[in-house]
Length: 632
Image (cartoon, rainbow, N blue to C red; front, side):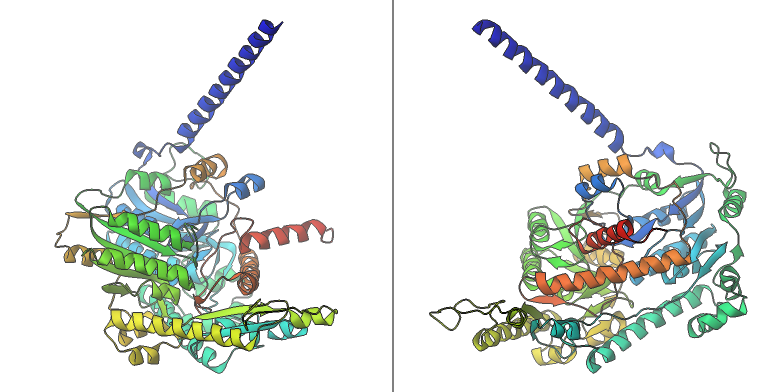
């Protein structure tokens, strides 16, 4: 009997082992099949099709596998700006590509600097005597800017467009918090450091309004100048000054209004647009449906045009998104993660380093962690440049300070040199319901800061002193790196944000230039000629599990998604307002330590992400409202 039991256990073990082996082989084969890179042989003579179903970003956020598996769909698309520029530039010189086609029907925008970089790349295609065609149903500021660089911009007959311009309103919670009897303890330095204002005021302060009016006016002037340069006949004054009158003059026909203003060239649906492209590049040899044309998609095209890897390496480290403590990212700048990348880079044979910054700041501790890691590389004699993208403000400027040369664009938002801390306490709220606090302490700081019983004057004074010391340190770091005195920096600091042009005049940046310009400068400092170096993007390797999920659930970049009309675009903007409101409340309750963050900086596109993020929570909230809302 014992022998039979042992034989049985052996057979069960063999069975389990074989089952496990088969599962491993199955999923291993599936992974290999789905993650294989698109073959360069998949490039077809015709158009390069850029179907932008999502946002253009500096660094795509990490896909949360749990959120994807539970929802059955991927978050809205994210397209790395430098990948798009590389794809467009390659199309300009490749004989197989006859035109570049922009499908903007589901485009959710990007930062102004990214839009100007893409526009410049499209201009290079047109300079190569190749047409650029754009199509959308609804045009907004970012898609209008891209379409302005097209040789033919199309709009659906049922479509419309608008130019909102930068700016908008933000919620102020001061009166609400007072009604709830929540005490908000604010510690800050900087007349213009307005991040704390929504928690203690009912409206914007005069200094904050002054600074924000200046920065938004400068950015809008840059936007209008860019559009006017490539479409000099466009009537931007009418579109922006009297949008209701502009639409009424066209009889309420949004598509005709866009054409009459010179913002688009032709009116037609997707089929008519596709037939026009087919006239230029040829019909799709496989798909005979109306409106299909010969093309190559973005993923296949990028695989066929990899980044060159000859010569010495110049490292590129990206600091994108909120700067937070810990190992977060990509898409969020985790201090531990980026410092580890920089320390690992120091052990490699790098000829130089470029720090690419696209962040409005965050944790002071994480910002300092990144800054000191950059300083360690500089101490080894490695030339370090900083390339600012859309935003490099507050904590984003903190991490930029070590750069030997700082590059920015006229539309970059930078500065905001100041720090703050915000802590709530609930002693008045609890007292309203009969809850009091009492106890014994051995020092004035025992039990402090006490969010239930209130803060003592001593702890208030100490926290304010700590923030003031942090500001002094921030100013000193900038003064040292910029060759100024602390007093000179203090006059242009105080938490105020600046556009790239003004920042250059003030000496906060050295020169205008793109990431490529920063790389070229670094190569020159390393005495490397053209062709003797190549960029290596540190920490840019895709998560294999995220790639697998994208292949399993995500659509091909050539596949069409449902088109969004102008009402859907407005709905998406309202969703973004909710995301910002939720994120603001979370910062009040969830911030750890002093913060160097910019409230007045333009908002970046933020796709719905993990369920424990602000966008994820808003998505869940809207989902519940749909479930329990009134039947229709």
